[in-house]
Image (cartoon, rainbow, N blue to C red):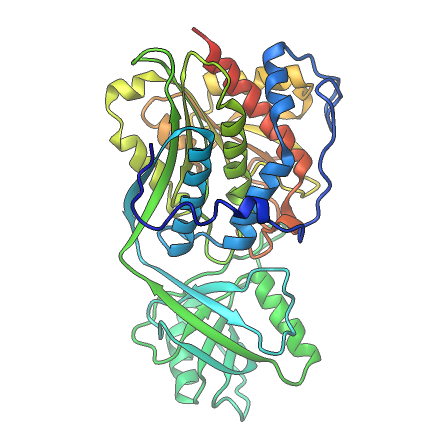
Length: 462
């Protein structure tokens, strides 16, 4: 049963079948009994594990990921793009036979920008969305030649600033004065360039604060966009740009939840989840398109398998704004509902292709083992992945935290660097978080097998 409010969730149902092969990745091909890439030994699977691993399709997961990260793109909490993704996800859960609903909640206004390149000189394999200053000119599109004036604290103004799009290295303290001077000199827009972060971090796009009623658009780009803009300016005599800004107000974000009831009205609950929203300027292929498509594919595989427990599959909205969607959901749960939860398997960034991300982390908000971490640890042992699994380790910052804060057994599972779960891939939260630049289908498939076999084992228990 589906809540049918809002945009039609059926509009993108044909998109999976119609997803093109623009992103060519080799499909992992291993049999149930084969040793997996990176595993220390061949698997020792029971008959229930085999039902899961033989049912999983990396191709299906990839097709969902193409819809989310390539056809829809950045899915900013509460915006039309996030709602489009929510409707798509709900439509898929409908098709699998789940009782599906959208769970709406209000979120803060958002301010985005789009950089256009009329001469097609900039690379088109990254996202060119940026953040817009709420105190700048909004809901407009302007165009002009790019002019780089260097640091905003000490700009070198060329003679032809009038009618230009001005680029400058951003400093928050200098921002109001610099923007005012750029506007006074006749600039049509300002692009603020972030300071580079230490490797492997790269600065994300941002909505510049500290401005009031600036008469021109002011936008904040990501580190990779900054580099590409300056590289282009170094080799061409003319780089015209268009800058469009949009204010998104009165926003409603949504959680997407599909349920198949277990045996009895008080059956325990097992949940698999991910968040489907992104930060501004990021297509979100790995963060967290990967966890979202893992959840969808396991929902498909588990749809017809018998379980004692109620199965819930949740895709959280507005995680990137501070776990807003999952915290809203948990706040609505009566205590008798909370008491029924046996485990929540949260999946956030489960498919990066970054070579150093060789550890599969079991992340618990309190750092302690629970039903979710124990089940995934056991699944890893059956699949031969003992050596690559670390944890449980104390870490929140994803939707498992919302459940653990009220005493529900939950954990987050993710591929990250070997020295720390804070060591995330360079495309994290950037325009380069694309399928081509940041997704490994092998890691995605291993993640689906680990979570699928673990969740099914917990859901079968009496």
